[in-house]
Every structure is written in structure tokens, then in C-alpha cells.
Amino acid sequence: MYFLSSEERQLLLKSLLPAAREQIVANELRGWSWFQEPMAPPYSTIKLAVYEVASKYCGTARDLWWRRVKQVKYDPNEAMVEGKLLHAAMSNVISRAKKLIWTIGIEHPAEIISKLREFDELAFERDWNRNKVKPALDVVLPKARMIWEYETSIIEARLREALSRQPYAREDSIVSTAIPLVLEQRLDGSMLGLSKHLSVDAYQSAEPMILELKFGTREDFHKIQVAGYALVAESLYEFPVNLGCIVYPTFEKDHLAVEKEFFLIDEELRQSFLEQRDERMRMIFEEIDPGLMDECPAICPFYNRCYTSERTGLVLV
Image (cartoon, rainbow, N blue to C red; front, side, top):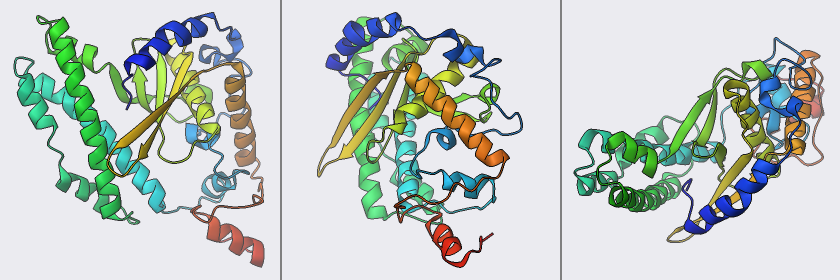
């Protein structure tokens, strides 16, 4: 799902990249300015995950208040577990493809593809069973298998194309050509007041671009999350990251539909991330209860705690 179609590649080359290179972003809004305002975090003792800054599933961020101020632990709901399992399926198929190329060797592409097609259902069930709250296996397993088959077909085409163009290339070159992605790139965001153990879904190295995979509905704040990762990458590597892409898969009856939303990581997104970071750090540092949303989703893991505390005046700990 991270690989670009021919149409998307043309969009990238002819439109997005020229626009990204012409885009003006003030130096103080680049991650490499981490030591000065507005990039410098207002509180040195608080470290947030990028999703804790960007997420607006709870409009008032009271879920963050429960976790970080009241230190309340919670069990992920079924939707969260399903997303985690499907992310893992996506990561595993690409990682397995790279491993097979290195271990089997590019002299045997048919064997690589044959082994890559073998979806390990038992391993998936073991991962599913490790969760306390579980989505229905007969619902999530077909989705994982669909992801695996979809990615395998694309990787096969890319592998064969890379081999046809570069018949004398070795394994490492073919991997970097056919699968130019770093999955779950680990980033230390501490210079920006963020966690030392951040993980980006995918990083495209040919032209620095942050990719995030989202299962479920589109949300405007998804772009703010990508902007946060871009700022961290800039703070670490000191080169501009101007492009973001959010991948939205949809599971149809017998196939997978994939839409990608490309966008420039502009000044507005950067400022939004920094403003939310500062507001949420202040909420935690001063232990401010932000109160309830007008309408809270019942699937929120803190739903019962919020409404019990509001009715009784007691805060459950």
C-alpha cells in the first residue's frame, strides 16, 4: 500500500516534488531549530508521543489527562487491537520480502515469490490471542490475508521489474530499488519534547516523505501527526521533509481498495502541531482537567470513567 502506482508516481514527479521544493517554510518552523522557540518544548520534564499531541479523537484531550495526570491504565478496545494487527500484517509482509531476497538470493526469484505468498495463519492467530480484548478472528483474519495477498502481488511485480532493468545487481541493490521503504523507522523525539521511542509507519528515502497507514475514517488531524514526525526527522537529520502521505485502505467484499492522500507539510501544519504540543504539556504540568466533549464516542476506553466521575463527583483511580 506504500508503493506508488504509475499515476501516483507521475503526480509525485510532476506536481508534488516541484511544489515541495518551491515551498517556503520559515527556518524557525524546521525541526533543526529545536533549540529555540517555537520549536523548543516549554517543559523539559514531559515527553509525549506524537499521537498524544496530534490525536483529536477526544476533542478536549481528556483521554490524555486520564493517562498522564491520573495515571490510569486502560485496555485497548477492539478497533485499536484490529488496527495494531493489520499494521503488523502490513509490516511483516514487506519485512519478509526483504529477508527472503537476502537469504535466498536474487538468482531464485520464483522461490522468493513462492515463499512470500505463504501467509502464516497460525502466527497471526498467536498474535491475535495475546490481546486481552480481541476483535472477532473471522473478521480480522480475512483482512490480514487480503493485505498479505495485495502486497505480495505488488512486490512480485516490482522485484521482477528491478531484476529486468538491473540483471547484474546484487541483493542489497535490488532491495533498495524494489522496496525503497524503511518500515517502523525509529526516531528520538526528545529534542522536541517528544518520546525517545517514536515509530513512523514508513519512510520513503528516495525523496524524504513520511507515510502513515490509517484504518478507519479520515480525520483532519492525521496530517498533524505526519507533520510531527517530519519535525522530528528534521531535528535528527537536518534535511527538509516537505511531503506527507496518508494511506487509507478499505476492505471490500473480495478485494482491497487503497486511497492515498498526498500533501505538503506546510507552515500551518507545523504550527498546529507545536501549538497542540504546548497546550497539552501545560495541561499535564498544571494538572488541568479539560472536561468532557459535547458528545463522547462510546468506544473511548475512558468513556465509563469520564461519565462515572461526572455523575458522582468522584474521580476513579
